[in-house]
Image 1 (cartoon, rainbow, N blue to C red):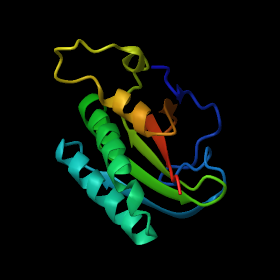
Image 2 (cartoon, rainbow, N blue to C red):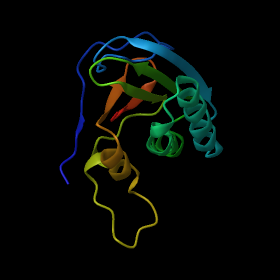
Image 3 (cartoon, helix red, strand yellow):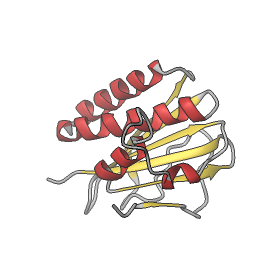
Length: 157
């Protein structure tokens, strides 16, 4: 399956500010969360994404968005260094979308994107899930945090 991941050369936002560069229009709602570097942070990420979408009345995106958030945060916890930052931004416009940005203090490993998992492996498929569910996603180095993973979940209706 061809990947939609890309390296985005646009200037990055200041630390703690949601990254809305790829959204069609400026974000109309957003929030930032700092998560500890433990696997339970994936559960916390699912919960905050779900609550954010419920407040916006966009419950149709909860399943996909919580799974993508969980995968990105799990990767940050497993392969990066704490703390992990989760930024959420909602954009209205031609293509209303949820933008998820996950930053950690590790070093980016772009080779992980191209890795093919052994069929018997118990891990290594998270970014394939993200690729399937997100309209766009990518990994980039972050000037403050280290690694920046992002994904956009586009509303269909």
